[in-house]
Amino acid sequence: MSRMSVNLVINSNLCLRDPAQTELGRKIIQHSVLLIDEMGIDEFNFKKLAQRIKSTEASIYRYFENKHHLFIYLINWYWEWVKFRIEMQTMNVLDPIRKMKIALRIIADSSRRNMETPYIDEDVLHTIVVREGIKAYHSKSVDEENKEGYFLAYKALCKVLADIVSEINPHFKYPKAFASMILETANNNIYFAQHLPRLTDLRETGENLTDKVVEMLEHFVFKMTKIESVARPEAVSKNGTTIRAN
Amino acid sequence: MSRMSVNLVINSNLCLRDPAQTELGRKIIQHSVLLIDEMGIDEFNFKKLAQRIKSTEASIYRYFENKHHLFIYLINWYWEWVKFRIEMQTMNVLDPIRKMKIALRIIADSSRRNMETPYIDEDVLHTIVVREGIKAYHSKSVDEENKEGYFLAYKALCKVLADIVSEINPHFKYPKAFASMILETANNNIYFAQHLPRLTDLRETGENLTDKVVEMLEHFVFKMTKIESVARPEAVSKNGTTIRAN
DNA sequence: TTTATATGATAGTTTTACTATTATACACAA
DNA sequence: TTGTGTATAATAGTAAAACTATCATATAAA
Image (cartoon, rainbow over all chains, first blue to last red; front, side, top):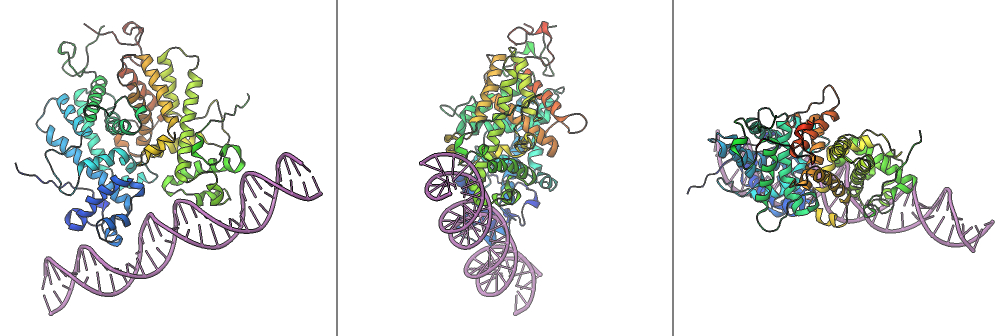
């Protein structure tokens, strides 16, 4: 089995120099993921990163203006990766319900399968996104950062999901809001199950948490778009709307 | 018309001294809300706050250990306030659907009505919660902070909502996840409409954004719990589940 | 060989996030 | 009235964070 290596293209405004192109750049990405996972983005800084990779603060500043940019870079990379996987795995799938199920599993699950970027531990990055990813686009400076295109990956992924929603039910009124809600809900419920269990019904015990999250998301999506998860063909019309009395 | 002044009780672990009890304390709360709104929580610090209220950093440190605690205090205050209003306004309401509609409006809307805490501008605080409230409980240190009871208000509010969901449909499988989802979705869509419009279908133009958010949330809730927003009595059974063909 | 580029080593500045000390003002109690 | 306690102000200081600047060195490309 050959190992495919994919290089995701990240908004070049986010870095001063492309980290994927150099040894030091890749080390910065690799170890910032590990360090941020260990200590959280608030405690993390370039001095600690420099020590870890045996380089200097000044060298890291040649790649990223500041830690916030590095952080957004990583979050962007994550969403690009999710979008890439969804697009790859749904490429030849016609049934929008099947597509949605594939997408939901990818959104809730970070376990590496078909692709490999050798210097990024996608599972660890997923942990960071679940815990702190939200911070990337919740700040006073959203508007300027949005103008720079810092959130394109997330917005593009949201569109991919929203389009599937509309395919399932073309009459559904809020495909984009629903798509962003699903993305947030997936991460939130993983986080809540692990840290704030009163905010969710899912528990970390026993079987895989990912499976439970996917099950719940499917339930939400198919109930909302009026299609039962376990479809009863005679009660569901072709375009996915439920046939009801009267 | 008499003016009622309510003093919400906030977890005393969050402050070193109760700010509601003193002139300086109230000034700290009042102006931290205004300053955080102006510059965002990242730019905000005790030095700037001290300058604004013509006091000193050291004096502010006698009330709050650090700005993170002050921030969580404010967020807690906000959720206590929302919970208080929901409980007041649904106190004598029996119909869970009516209760839910009242709760949703309160969740999406910050305009002051029945109560007044003279030193807190609830509308400005709402802006902060919409933009950055999420940061209060997304960090590496959630577990310790949760142990200290820093998130009790949010969790209690979530329970209030989840209970209404269960009243509407006792068979609904995920009342808590759904409640937290609604809370997050309300704030997110206000924020998205204002800053990241591709993540929502709602627009800030024309009529009140709050109305649109409430309409959408009602749509989500009643579709999910199988009750139409504009109820057709003959198609809806007493416990709120939709009667369907077969 | 020259030149450009990347990194490292070192040192420095400014701002943030605190801590400590002393002074003052005011409330209340004896 | 004096004394005591408490809150705040004024001032000063420290440690770390968040950068910036300079120069030396290694390596690769022209």
